[in-house]
Length: 235
Image (cartoon, rainbow, N blue to C red):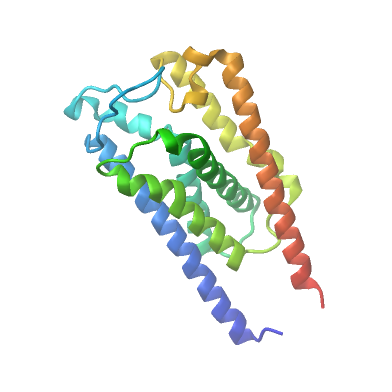
């Protein structure tokens, strides 16, 4: 049985792990935002379809480059991880509905980011310049830290199946933003969101499949949390 001292040490380690995750995620988000705004990323050599990548050079393209960067699901997932784990580091015992949903969304979204990138996009992505640092940072390191720190340190009992509908809110907002903005500028962040090439039906099918996989992942995290909570509560 854990003593009060042991629990205190465990809490300190948990907060440090969550803080490390938050800091790394924030560093990645700020870094890609600054590099995009200043035009420091190497421009894409070939743009297939209607994807982000064409901007005026220099200061004139700063805003469009920055908004494009902040429109990637990868960046959204890293921002959610940064917010969720910042709150965990500051208020580990709060357990409000918002905080629990953010944690579930962080795990769900960063898992989708990591899996979709390495399964579908990595083979076509040629790292050069700053992307040698930023791409693995946002697509792998943050995911490992977020999932690992939650798996090791918890919190336990926060992720429940009744949160699954709420976990769809942020991904759905991203989808609406992506399609609405794409209809205006005729450019999209990913091949599977390229309405101009695939049509709305083609994009919808792909997004529904990804959302279904996301819900399965979220349900798996809830099931793991439920099982581990029961094992802790058992005498």
